[in-house]
Length: 542
Image 1: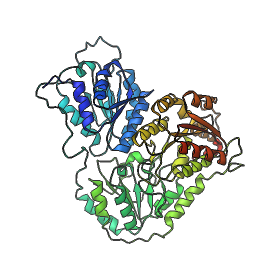
Image 2 (image 1 turned 60 degrees about the vertical axis):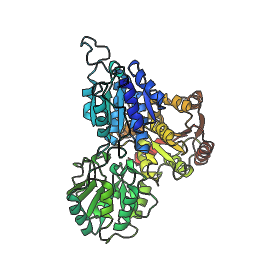
Image 3 (image 1 turned 90 degrees about the vertical axis):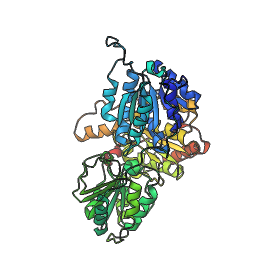
């Protein structure tokens, strides 16, 4: 060829497929690849934990449609990356994790940082393998396409430094953009689609349940068209909030959290449940209804959880277009979706607070969430971390547009919210981005505040402060057990924020909360809003 080394080829491959930034913590094995990327204009974003880098990459993938990429060192770097790749696996997001590794020729007695990385990542990836100079031109497209084919998911590339510096065989051509755009287009739907459409056309009370498979460009309009054609209520799962506008009269609620009894009651009134992009990984808890299910999905979504009678697989855009032509007839009362929506609102309404708007010492968490929704523009992006607050946010928050609500609902690890927000703001620099997170998850990844400050991303962090892992504490209280292992002391969050260069506000009532949020969003300055919340309210929502 012309002396192109494997690292340069890999960098050119990523650049040709639309990668504009990668995330990670570098190691000695990755310097050649990072330098090759830099020469092609691809930024390397330093994180402070490898899992956080993968979470940032996942948000990038969700908002851009291009797999997010993270690059870390071998051994401990790869192991710290593992929960981020596992999260992408269960959240169905295309993330490519690249780590260093021992060269194939290294003698086995060399045990320093030696782990069977390819084998460890294999169960949670669509492709897991070692990159070598001889096979790079074949394995890179294969691995990339595996992450996008059908149901999106992660891939893992072990890239030994000894291979990164080797020259490729002379017959290998430079990497180029693939013809016809990105890989990952689904196959045309098969014969089961006709059976599914017949079943839908015969239903008098169909109910749409929308899952993570719709979170792709071009599907929101078809989903809206089908709902209006059937004149039926619509439920969404947490990861696709916003793909059906939640101020639409047919929107009934977000399905799959703790307190969703009104939504199960709605399901029992239906004569057919129609899953659109539904996936077993959508569900926070076990499926409890025996109503018949028809599924329209693509990519072989896991459906044993909800056991559809008919599961039509194939290009979901085509399936939605075909479904929009079914005869329109509905026995649903015109206000049935609104009745369910109001019932959910009643469940998450504050019930224990003596001062419903807060008293200057603490306030219901629902008040802080409500004020953030009022302050954030309609197209603003919210990320939410895992914890008791997530249960409330998912039910209470109204999302109106695709890709304006990001959470993890599969693996659901604490600590995702802040890295999601960083990745989202980098991908959408002109869109206001906010994050709701608990103090427990925040303290796991506090170092990422330095990332926020260094990158100058003006995200607003609404920190729900209750000095405990409240979701677990609720369970202990209900069992009559003492609180063990769930409470911690309160740091000086003002000093923490200012030490990292962020603005800070402490709020404990509705008026001060709204003022702080309005100011942070208007000034476009990274701000930690420390909201002192009453954790007793969480016991009523889970």
